[in-house]
Length: 132
Image (cartoon, rainbow, N blue to C red):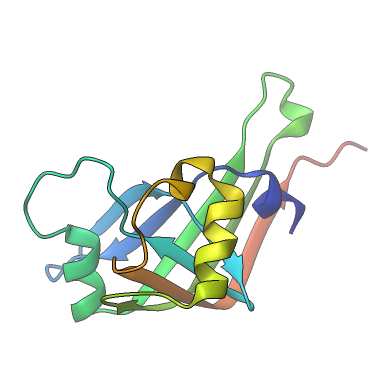
């Protein structure tokens, strides 16, 4: 849990319709045991986002949180496997508040009517350097 709280970004892994992995860095907030991942106003390619297309076809996904340090005794990662759904056109006020408290940039963005990915965890796998 500490690694999730310290992480400013996670990597969202989805599965393409062809079965290929697709990874993208995402902002997130933990909300009622689930992860909220907004589709925000940052510049996008203009095409429909692959992560949304992928989740529509295959809801299984994963979030990866990691910490790197040149002092390798500090290395750690956590992968959260689960499934996600896309909620179009608005998010719960509490979810929006959680995102805005984590990222000051979201305080100025109109997220009230944007889509959000809601990921429900099913399994966690982690690793941390262990010193004897």
